[in-house]
Image (tube, rainbow, N blue to C red; front, side):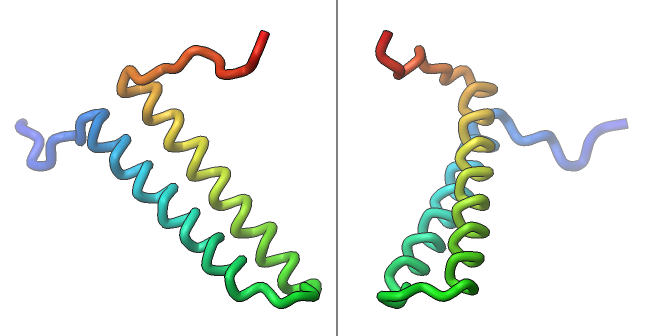
Length: 78
């Protein structure tokens, strides 16, 4: 039986992961632009949530890059 919906190639998955990361970064930036001078507990909770979403999206993007053959050497100084 033929697959009606062929699997996306690794490059497309990487593009999608990058777009998701970009959107999460924009959401975080938008929040920071409207952040009051003195954040309240709700602001801190929202920041933590947005930061967590952005970090998850970054990790997913990196995993997709690795799967697409874009492994980078360690960027840490030795």
